[in-house]
Image (cartoon, rainbow, N blue to C red; front, side, top):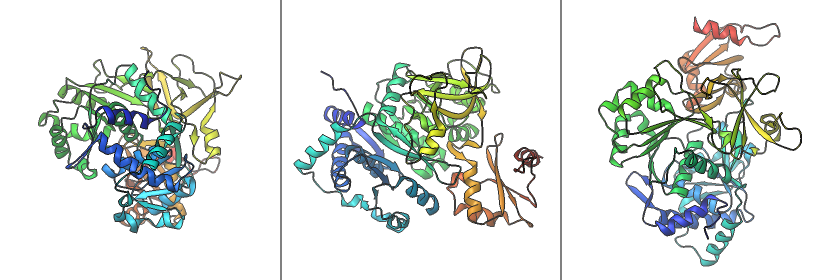
Length: 512
């Protein structure tokens, strides 16, 4: 009788037994098989369990993306806990805010990063270095981990992903095993994912939900994860050559790098002949650039996916199976099985056909909420207004959509100041809050130029500050992807009738 899976690690146990020598992860010259991944993860999991005897804790992982971080994430799963990957390049202030909000029980790191662990030690979080992993697993520890594996439910947390928050404190999205298991099976059901062995070129940061999905495909469907070095995105020719060397068959990328490759016409020089499936999500892919990729890779299928982190990756998909003109926007398509997308108007009623509305989602993939943040959870995860008889939650994305004449969902833009920039979801208010809190300027307003895809920083001061100096100061406070591109000085912010900063006036002035 086939095993009923209640968590991701049960799949790895099966695949390690049946395909022990198949390569699970490639990182430079290191090739890690499924059996090696399982054994190394279990040995580390035994130590994690000593720190978290009860299970269902949050374990921070503070490592570069690579073999060690994959082992650490899987080890956390085996220990019956949820992992939270943290960016080693983030400023200390952001990491402190995350630790204050989530309060992980332990951090897994490396001895090479001990000098960067001040926020963790100040928060009295125990530190476990991967170098302390035992060389063998005691039988009694193996039995304990087996019990923990089988006790883990699909509704238990798999991981926490930190996304931007308007108060300066990132929101920790709590995501479950069930959400990602369902995403894999839903993609298979609609035919955009099959059971053929895959080699995936993993480019997304390991703090991204795309990476979580890639990891699930490794564990659940025996895919091979090819780790693209962080600095290689700046050298796309080398990256494409690496992909050819390892015969990459599947991509799931944010469109930014795909646009760069198209602009440089690299697919005319380097043919990715093994590539069969290309997924893209996280931001709008200009149709002209998508058309370029489709012309050069006629053997590949292209799928546009949509969904915020709170939906356990994505809730809608559209396979680009017909021709589009370069200036024609791509649909985001239809809801995945076991998910429903509804558009709500300003009166919290379902939008009429042809009417714009806020994209709201219900179904298994919807996250339980934000970790340790009931107030924000209640605001974003709300009762379905169509149902007043029992608790029936849906997530309000803040995005505006409309259904086209073909019955396909179209993305129309953001409802507020939450943006997608280079694949990262950023709350512009967080940038404002952190910069003002650091007393760099007396007042500021952050805008987004959607046409040029640039973050615009407007600041109020009697005299302008050197752009180079201001950029350097802000870079110490924010991750690189949140640092503004354009700096505009004003002596006084324009105000509207309510006394609030007139953002519309600033947008108009900034575009002149």
